[in-house]
Image 1 (tube, one colour):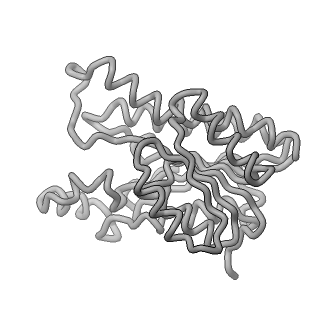
Image 2 (cartoon, helix red, strand yellow):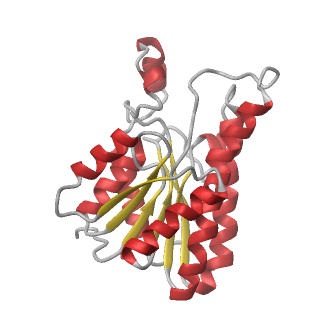
Length: 254
């Protein structure tokens, strides 16, 4: 059975690259109208729009979701263009490859990480939920990480931000269920994207990472986008508050 989201309107944050771009393309292929946000990469965002085909209904919006005004800008653009929001994929995030020991981590580093990875999810949910409540339906899928479950040494700020998302998902799943809004999370492990490329491009590090993955390889962005599509579809109509691990078996978390 093919998974479809025909005639649905999806908003995707961080849609110009990696998992976000793969999600935009897959949703467009699966029948959705898609509005996606990006912060700086205008050329990459335009390429994503073009790759979806001339007949697709895909719109790129420049918005910094780490600010309330940026979250509102993205949601307002979707409502102006398509009139509703059925699906929200909160994906935008950062992960600096350079290790940051806690005793050397600056306040600015900590604040930026939480502003983008945690507050950036809050801002778009905050502005999308009133419309979902009014229409009495909605799907929210948040992209966390295995780091949010097991921690990540020398990236404590990243792990804290992603762990916060898991608690947010569990809280909102219960809070929004009476409004028929389902809130779930995908937690990817290592995925071959430009964010992880500085680490995966180093042969020794890549071998070490793959050795810790039972499937013996890192994931592809589309392999995370497909579970996101599943959670957005009618096939997941009785699923809420769940953390779906997509990591090749590397972290077997409950």
